[in-house]
Length: 262
Image (cartoon, rainbow, N blue to C red; front, side, top):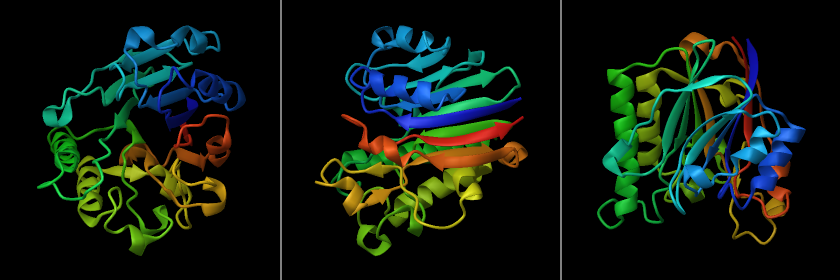
């Protein structure tokens, strides 16, 4: 069963429902995973998405913060969520397709501004979240699974606009990269985007602070598509929709795509 999947930190799905509709109409992914929906589930604009053929929806919501949703043209079954680090946040949800593939949608904490857990509680929470992901994957090693989402870490040197300048900036510090790598290794996850595009600068996020994000191009690849080794070879056609950063009232993230033949 071939299908195309996309992941997008929408930064308020109610505010940007029109952008989601545009993506669904123009790109028509079979499955769209959204993060940072910033809404309780009952207030998500789901009828707008159902009208475009996305009748199958699994979501976890939270007023004003966090929130994850999986919209699908294909039938999916809700298979639960995990509260990593005991934060009580809506940051993970999973759904299973009829072909047996489980899709995990993650929104890893950003971690605040200071990369020191002794002075920044949020940074410690981020590291704890990643450690619990690692431990879960060790205990229940995933199979036939895809993990997507805003993982809030750009792990490689070519995932950021300037490796040396960002080594002490949250999202690219060595300790974060090590924690993400440990979680990836524990689950045997393959980075599908980099499997398809093995070299070169790749970004999925550009700060709102840049007067001209496109000209400055100081981006980071914070949004990821991974798959377990047993299905990684079925992944292909990865791409990042950079143009979406220039849409009217955009999210600071853009959609990341991958297709699978399973």
